[in-house]
Each structure stands twice: as structure tokens, then as C-alpha cells.
Amino acid sequence: MEVFGILLSLALLVTFAYRGFSVILFAPIFALIAASLSNLPLLPSYTELFMAKGVTYVKSFFPIFMLGAVFGKIMEETGMAQSIAHEVIQRLGKKRVIMAVCAAGMILSYGGISMFVCVFAIYPFASAMFREAQIPKRLLPSCIVLGVFCSTMDAFPGSPQIQNIIPSTYLGTSLYSAPVLGTIGGIFLIIVGYLFIEWRANVAMARGEGYGNHTRNESIIDENAKIPPWQLAILPLLTVLIVNALMTFVYKWDPTLLDAFQAMKLPLVAASVKNAIAIWALIVGLVTAIVLASVTGYKYIPKTSSLKDAMNAGALGSLLAIMNTASEVGYGNVIASLPGFKVIAESLLNVGANAPLFNEALMVNILAGITGSASGGMAIALDIFGKHWLQLTAAQGIPAEVVHRVASMASGGLDTLPHNGAIITLLAVCGLTHREAYNDIFGLTCLKIVTAFLVVGLYMLTGIV
Image (cartoon, rainbow, N blue to C red):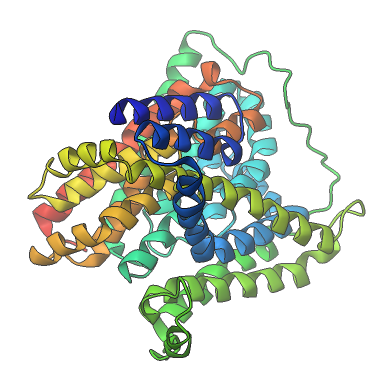
């Protein structure tokens, strides 16, 4: 009955999320259904288990969600994000539209702009170029996925995206963990993913399929709109990366910074300074970039908006984003506490028990798929199994930095199942349905899963970090 409750709960969550119902509302409901079928009392399961884990996630990562959303909204309202996307797509031209869309997404996401803002910034120019080149529009979402949701999200060292930040708080590592291993995996993913989309486009166009007749969310570009030059627009992105690197490798953090707070016996205080450095460094980088973008771009904000509006919209938007993920984390942790899950987990932990990196990639993928969230699934996996994996890898001489990179890359695999919130939003922005566009996205999902395991194999064969 316990296992049946978990499967029923998961099926309901996937179905409701797929149909657009808020996980903030329904994740606790379905978690409590599973808890009740395991004979756990409902209200304590909600207040002491679901909420406790959700609040822990908010405490750890809300500053990054908020500052990232504010930064992204300022870059959007000032036209800086659009300027960069427009420049990249125009420079590469309609003969390389697919490459241009992917490249624009990589630049924006690696520079610290939230993935949702990247989608809104890229889509108008990308759809116009797809229409001009007569490339099927149904391939556009997969191009954006490759550019925004792949290598620059979790593979490349120093990525300021949340999927690269979470492991640092559990493992005491930095955002630059396993740089060579991550770069090789990221480049492999880009090359094979690009060739896959190009192949799909060539097959479609060879049989006479063009852009298609679309009426939903068709972009209209105002050629007279005043946007900043791309050289100015890219400075805040470079600032995030440079300041983050300086605060990580050059600035010497006082190892006693947390002593006074630990002495107060405050709840949820980080175990040590090294567990918080990645968050602190990125906070400084994002604040610096926000100030720079505000100063240099405010005059490009349209008269219908203002800097205050952009900041307020970003701050409010961050609440929805983090509460969605926190609800998924709360849901996952209720499920992970049930007897039925413990039976499943013990079985899965025995898969590749002598190869902890393989087991890590497997478990993170499964939990990301269950929650429909890369960050949510990875946070649950590291919270429950992180110390176990660290013990096993340390015994085999595997650095924690490799554990970080494998967790980060594996989180971006099964998370992009149909109920993933980012996928649902992406398709809505593009004016397409799952039936029209998801097959190609799923091709990239499979590639991302394979890449995480290839990275594990590469490390085991070469020891490269």
C-alpha cells in the first residue's frame, strides 16, 4: 500500500502539473495523500515535514532567486537582453539560424540571466528568423532548450544558475568544480545537440515542411524600438562572471564569520563558511551587475515602465519561482520519508553500489524526474544521500568537486519531462503544444541523461577533473 500511495501521488502530481495547476497548491495535497496511505497523520506531515523542508530550501536559495530575477528583469526592461540576442542572431544570419538561437541562449544564461527571461528575450527574434528561413517553428523550443537549459545551466564551470549553486551548499564546493570535466561534457552536449536539431530540421524541410501556419504568440518586432548597443549590454553579464570569480578565488573569506551566529544556536545556520561562500560570492556579483545595468541602461527603459517597476516585478516574480520549487522539494521530502520510498531507495542504492558516481547520476535523474524540477530533485537527492555519496567517493579517492559536477549535470536530465514548469512556460511563450514540439525536446532530454553518465565514465577512465 505504501508503494501504491507513492505511485498514485506521483501520477496525480504529474497530471495536474501537466494541465497547468499550481504545484504550490497541489504538491502538498498529493504529498499528504501518500502520507495518509502510509498511516502518517496528515497535519503533522504538512507542518512538520512538508513545510520544514520547503522553508529550508527558501532559506538557502531565496537571495539567488530574488537577485537573479531582479537582474533578469532589469536586463529585459532596459532592452539589454534583447540587444544581445538580436546581435547574435543577426550576425550569424538566417543560414545559421539554429546555431544563432542556441548561441544567444548560451550567452544570456551563462551571464546570469534567469532562464525565463532568456526565453522572452530570444523568442521574438528567433521566431522571426525561423519564419524567414522557413524552418519549422516546432523546432524553436528545442533550440532554446539547448541554448538555455543545457551546458550553461549545469555543465560549464562558474555558471551562476541555481542548478550549479545547490551542490556547493551541501558539498562545500565552488561553482567552478571539476572545470575540465564539466567543459568537456558541456561541449559534447552542445555539438551533438546542435547536430540533432539540424538533422531534424533538414529532414522536415526535405519533405516540404516549412515554418507552418501559426497564429498564437506570433512575434512582431518594432524595428524603431530604442535598445542599447550590444557592447554596453554585455557588460553586466561579464560583471557577474568576473566578480563571482574574484570573490571565489581572490578574496579571502574569514573562516570565523559564522562563529557568532552558530553561538546563538540559530536554526539553519550553514555548517561552515565554505558551505556559504558560493552563495555569498554570487550575491556580490549579482548586486554589482544590477547596479551597473541600472546605471547604464535606465535611459533605455520605455516610458510605459520604470526602473522601480522592473525591480518590483523581478522581486515578485522570484517569489513564484522559489515557492514552486520549494513546494516540489517539500513534496519530494514527504515522499522520501515514507516507508515505501525507503524500500525503493535501498534497491536503487544497490544499483552500482561500487560506483557511487554512477549511482548519484541515476538517483538525481530519478528525483528530478519525479519532481519535474532539476533544482528540486537535486536538492532532495543531496539532502538524503549526499553524505552517503561523499563517504563512498572519499573512500575511493574521488574529489567532492566531481560529485558536485555529476549532481549538477544529472539534475538537468529527466527534469525536462512534460510536467516540468519551464517546459510548460517555454511552449506557452512559443505558442506551441506538447504534441507539436515536445518530441524534439525529449530527444535533448535523452542526450542530457546520456551525457551525465558519459561524464562519469570519462572521470573513471581518466581521472580528469
